[in-house]
Length: 214
Image 1 (cartoon, helix red, strand yellow):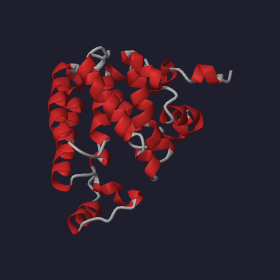
Image 2: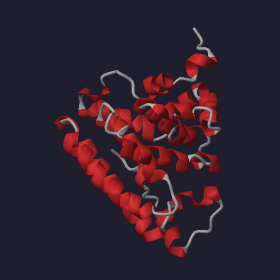
Image 3: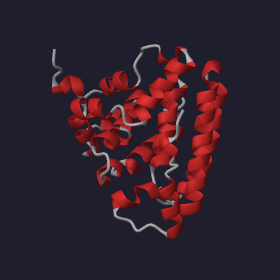
Image 4: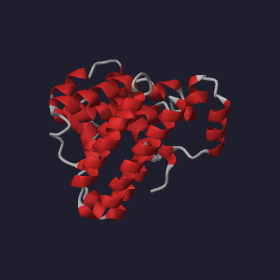
């Protein structure tokens, strides 16, 4: 049965889709597939077909009230940070909600919503939203995220520790990129920015953190 608009525009709809209770965390291999599907573009079709209207609503501020609860905040961060990257891939709109998503995630770190989340993979997506956002104090935010990722590694299930070790390394890589360039150079052509010679070399190498193999 097709869901109504009221059924779709609920935080639970986002959370059930993005964080399914399907046992993905039972083994390192299934959890790796959980991450690959979400972070390497494989979710694009499902998001475009099922969550276009919801993503638009989130971008327009119609779902801001979701942030009144920890899990609602997580759903809103996901809809603002992850879904636009699929719905509007390779266009400036893909990054258009980064500031809002990062602010929501940072606020969650400060007000206890982040600590209230159930598991490390949910928390990791809050950290990802912060790392995505370019702008002032990006390097300082990345320094903080390296520490937060280390805390996640410390509480991750032992059989998943290698995956969350990569989370620490990912934040370190992004921190180094921001330290060197002050931004994510791989976005330059999409955003109409002129690349420096150093950035052109980096882009030509194509070793971007978000494309790393697990």
